[in-house]
Image 1 (cartoon, helix red, strand yellow):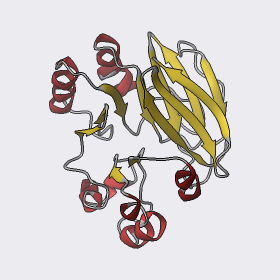
Image 2 (cartoon, rainbow, N blue to C red):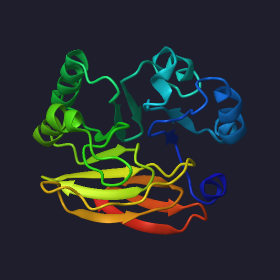
Image 3 (cartoon, rainbow, N blue to C red):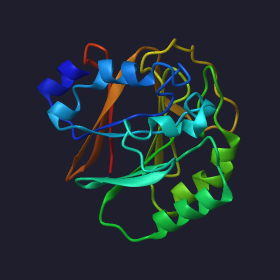
Length: 224
């Protein structure tokens, strides 16, 4: 990733959850060794909590390093408004906050980030709670791109104008892909491998590149 960023550009590193598998014992050392170069490059961090992160103190020990004011929040980055959700605890309060946030008029392009995808077919299936509580809000308020992790592979779906990306290939063991349940939207792209996403915003929309560890694109699409 560092080599790729040196050849391109980045404003913020967004995690998709499961930032720590050590229950806090080695998180600071591991993060600093892997991503300590970000600040020198002027790159910010916007963290998302996964199920492994909340096992200790609901993940609060990660907030400082990951630039998180809380378990869910909004971060503006240039022309983008990142809406970061905590899918580990889909409470009424958070859902009301999400509805108010999406209903508010904004000139920014909005990208929703959460850990548990509503649709995925691999080591995990999609979260029924996310589908019930949040997917209708994404559709009602015109969200176009939702990024998630949890399943250790890459998948892309589209439903009612919303593109859903699953990418859990940050470093842990990978999961095989499986057939999707009836009723899921059609899976448009998929792959198994480690890598990362590069999201670029321009006048024509949001361009997402899915990259392997060598920086080679295995998928590329535009959300307008």
